[in-house]
Image 1 (tube, rainbow, N blue to C red):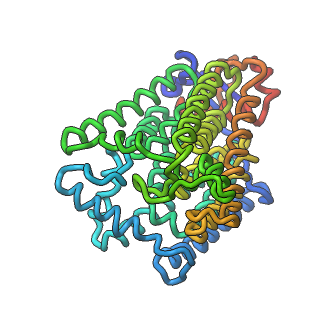
Image 2: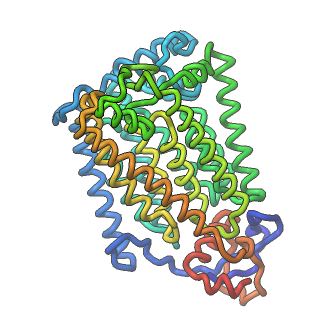
Image 3: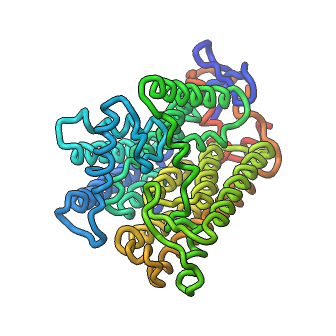
Length: 477
C-alpha cells in the first residue's frame, strides 16, 4: 500500500496520537482467502456461493429440528422459551422484573430481548425463533462483508456457518445467539469505528455482560477512549432507564452470588468423579435456574473457580499493560482469550455459552494474521461434544454416569486447552520489537491516482499491511 499526505477530508488519527494524515493509492484488492479457494474474482465468487449454499442447507436442517419436524432425543428443549421466557414476558409487561423468580439471572437489558418477540405478529415461541434466525443471518452477513475486504478472509464466516448448527436446535431456543450477533457487530466495528463498536459492545454488556470483554484488547489512545466511553455510556444509560422505569433491575446480583456449581462446568468434574467413586454424597438438583451440585466441597470448588477468574483477570491486565506489538488481529485475539478464560473459570457453563466462543473465534479468523487459528479448531471440536452432552445425554450427566461424564470431561478439557493455548499465542504474538504507530507520513508521491480515505479505513489497512508485508513496515520505521 502506498501512502501519501491526505487532503482535508482524508486526515487520520492513530491510536496513540492525533495529527497523522494519509491517503492511499487505489490498488486492486486481492481475493479474500478461504482454504482451497483460488485467487481472483472467480474464486471469491465461488467461495461466496459455497458459503451461501452451506448456510441455507444447515439452517434449513436446524429449522426442521427446532420446529419438531425432525426430532432428536433428549426431551423438549423449547421449554425455556414458551415456559420460562414467556413467563418473564408476562411479568415484565407489568413494569417489574421477576423479583420472585430466582431463575432470572440476567442484567436488566435482557428484559428488552425477552419482550422483543411480543412485537411480532406470531406466537411468542415462533417469534423468538424468527428473531434468532435473523440474528444468525445478520452475524453471517457481517462476517462475509468484512471477509471480502483487502487483507481479510472468509474463514471467519466458515467458522460461523459450521459452528452454530453443531450446537443443535438448542441454539434457536436461547437468546445467546442474539447477544452474540450484537457482539460480533461490535467487535468488527472496533477498528474502523471505535465509538460504534463500543456502543454495540456496551449494549451487549447490559444484556449479558460478556460482550464487554471485547474491549480488553483495544490499544491505548484516542480510539480506546472513544470505544470505552461509548460502551460505558450505552450500558449505564440503558441500565439507568430500565432501573428508573421498572422495579428490581439489579436484583439478579443477589441471585448470582448464591449460585452453586453447575453440573456441566469445569469445576463440577472433580465432584462427578468423586460421586462415581462413591466419595461424594451431595445432591444434584435445579437451583437458581440451572442444574447444580449441592453438598460437600461445593463451596470450596466455587471459591477456587472464583479465584481462577480473578487470576485470569489479573493476567489479562498484565498482558494489556506489557503488550509491545499490535496488529489488526490483536483486539479480536484478546477478546477471544478473555472470553475463554472467564468461561472455563465460571461456576456455570451452559451449552449456549459455546455460541459466544464460536462468534468470537469467527471474528478472529476474519483477519489472516490472527494467532487464534488452532484455538478456533479446538472450539469447533468442542461444539459437537456439547450437543452430545446436552440434550442427548443430559439426564446421564445429571446422574454422573461414567460414559456421559467422559464426554463432558473431553468437552471441558478441550475448552481448558483452548483457553491456555489462546493466552499463550496472544502473549507471544504481542512480544518483540515495538512498531511505529499504525499511521505514518511518507514523502509526498505523485498525486496522480491518489485519493483520500476515511481515517478508520486507513488505520485498519495500515494494520493489515503490517501483517501481510512486515518488511514494508520495517522500511517505514
